[in-house]
Amino acid sequence: MNTVATTPITESSALEAAFERSGISLPVPFMELSATVIRDLPLAHVADLKRFEAAAKSELAALSNMIQTGLDMRYGEQAKAQLLAENKDTGTTHVFDGEFDVAVEVSKDVSWDQKELQTIWSRMVAAGQEPTEFITAKYSVSESRFKAWPEVFRQPFMAARTVKPKAAKFTLRKPSAGEGAQ
Image (cartoon, rainbow, N blue to C red; front, side, top):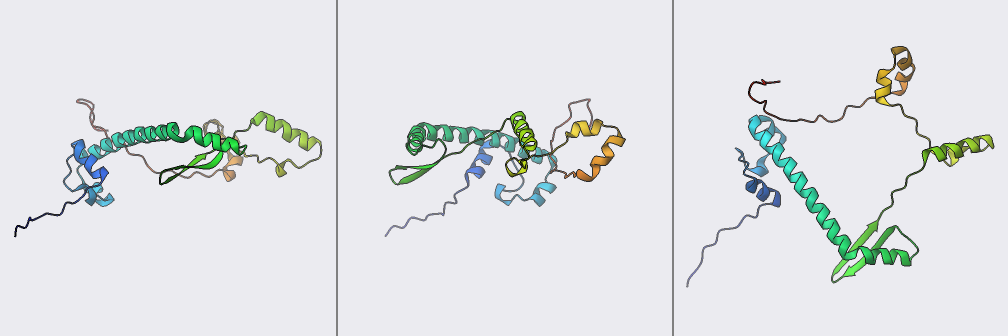
């Protein structure tokens, strides 16, 4: 009786495979990376990771656009026809293709003419109506203008201003010869 010895095949993730193809060599396996490991890596490896991340994002965005366009070419017209049959131009409809139920969501992007809304607001106030029952007004101050104001103008606004720092962004680059470290 012949027996064939088999070794288990470990399947790597698509991201691991892409990492291997990228040529980036790390001192630790990809899936063992963590924030702590990255903190302790030589900066050259972190720079490689940042380059890989940028390339991967770009390629994934291109892939996402191709998938979206392909699905739109395949199901878009049928979905639009189904919505129009219901006297809608937006909403969700379903296209059945073989064993798949393809949900097609056509969302809407609504914008309002701000000057026209301001005119309506003024008319409502003049007619004794309460415009806040119909219109939401949002007050804001341009940050660049605020910073340019003299302190005497800025002071009354300080109680209404909250500043929340966003997450830090890091850019790694090697200075060219003669430029020196910054």
